[in-house]
Length: 452
Image (cartoon, rainbow, N blue to C red):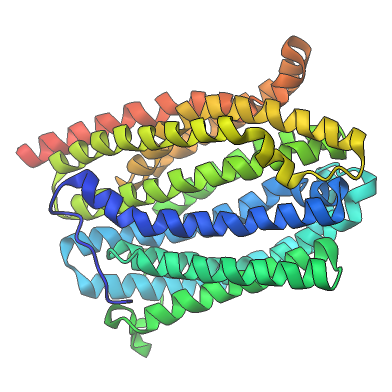
């Protein structure tokens, strides 16, 4: 399995992207499935307040995921370009730098974030009735950083050579483990939010083991001791990609946490309703993210091969197909929205249930409208990052932060409760022209360069 590779520099672009992305779509859906199962079990077994305790730290968890995802994407982009160039020697050196980076960052970020835990909880303005449960959940989630980082680095490097099967295998196995452990810890042992967090930690550890084992089976990942030292040229290249990505993610998270703290002040029922909506959104986003990963590997391999015309053609084809996929998914959600929301929300407290259900309905409809803009924005953003201009995405991130804060501070007095629902939609709208226009300019410049 580890030696399966896919060459995206040949054949029909969109067919190759979809074939490569297929396992990623399944893997991401399985990954989101265990997040959904967490929410269903907690919401139905432990009540609306327990569901709110998990969701009220969502932007902090998002930032943890973003750190690991951006780190993986950085080394994955570097690897995909070398795969397109057929440069196995440099690819191995990239693997070595990813290993050194992962060990250092996992230790440092985990330690610092755990030390800052009380301050994070205070900033989020979590309602007092759920504060302790939220703190416990977040503490255990922060311990997921080392295995999550290991999984993202390993799976991204495997994907850069065209191996997307390992990602699907790891996510499928971790999902099955998480569901089983949720049932054991939450339902069987009655550990509530703590049990759900422990199930997540152990399942992420399993996914990391599977991805690392796959790397060990591949000749491209077998390193000599002499290679395990800093390669400053490659590290500078990595930081040139990573730092703008991390800045972008940190800025987005900062704006999101401002919004989250305002939402938390509206009470646990409102937070629970947004949590239910967020789980549905995450499922849809997981498909888009898998497809954008396929676009990124396609762009990276063809950039390494110098095939700029092919990149442009593949970008246009993939945009049309991915938008069609999203519209089909959105239609399905609208048809089945009410029964889906009822999966997450317990009727133990009728008043809390009614408020949470109404919030979930209103928020989901707004988010679906916004995803019409989000979907192409994600594709353009990953393309410009892969082309080596991650600073453009960072600029878009600043725009997102500003518009989120403006919407949540000014919006309620103008449009009422809907201001809390459209913060992400406004952020995506401001980002689309920021990433799409430079994307085409860079591609056109590269095309003229290859012709010249």
